[in-house]
Image (tube, rainbow, N blue to C red; front, side, top):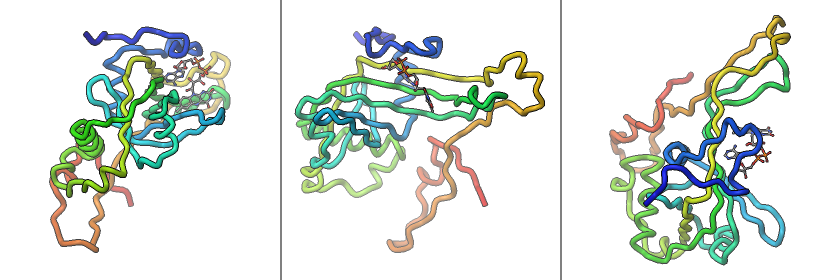
Length: 224
Ligand SMILES: Cc1cc2nc3c(=O)[nH]c(=O)nc-3n(C[C@H](O)[C@H](O)[C@H](O)COP(=O)(O)OP(=O)(O)OC[C@H]3O[C@@H](n4cnc5c(N)ncnc54)[C@H](O)[C@@H]3O)c2cc1C
């Protein structure tokens, strides 16, 4: 049975600001499901490499995909250990002192040995989930991948069992003496948003679909 909280290991235990640590599976999964991108780190021949990547979660497994020529994925398929970090930024925290500035955020770090997905049905399910994670409703409405494209794609599965989250919320941390200074302090909230869709005029004339117009994952904001 899946446990509510991840057990701490030497690597996953947050040491700095441990009051911000969360090991709760629900909180960690919320971050994984909400975030649109993350960073995958792998050491190759003793040298660190970090790649930006999109991800999707199905149950207790996190999946990444890419070209089957991708160096990091190939190394993972050969047994290299991976570390994945995922961040949602919620605000800029402006303190009185320059060095007390911070950010409000929810982040997840997870360590895992990934495995190449060989099963075609699982691979297909993951590719669908990846598209649906970013734009719900899009998979059914888009052309399905060809066999040639599938053969050129690698899907990697990471069991989610060594993970931590760190969450910062709230105002700046100021000293009493700093609060006497005539300097503005506070939080500038940040939220990712979309703007009005821009139709590609090179294709057929097709009305903007509901799942684009009423995109639910993010608010749509009109900017000049
Ligand atoms: C947007 C943003 C900006 C940041 N900017 C800075 C910066 O400029 N300088 C800085 O020092 N720190 C920054 N941090 C915090 C940073 O992520 C680390 O938490 C912090 O630096 C402590 O590092 P450490 O190696 O001492 O962590 P330790 O506490 O020793 O890490 C031990 C273990 O705790 C877990 N862990 C640590 N940090 C996180 C995390 N953020 N999320 C989930 N699990 C975690 C990992 O499993 C890690 O292996 C930032 C965080 C965010 C989200």
